[in-house]
Image (cartoon, rainbow, N blue to C red; front, side):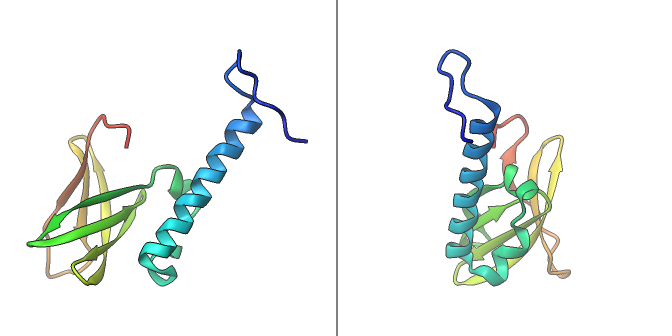
Length: 115
């Protein structure tokens, strides 16, 4: 049975969990549509999606669009796809390419942000 949100109490726990689950499902659909199942599906789990976010920026002179989860990110860099490791440090969230020849770090979020 679906409980109705209680305006005075800010809603029931069940309704909040359903809203969170619906939001995560929508984010998963958008990630698969944007980056394709081959790249995005391995990053999609309920736990990973709770901390996921999108980041738009530039890397090595090319536009970059990333779907960032807790440990991995999938990105479009120009016309190509690339995967990155995610590091959550005291100074912020950084990406490092999985390609062993490149050791550049890309800052995608500041520490203390809600993202």
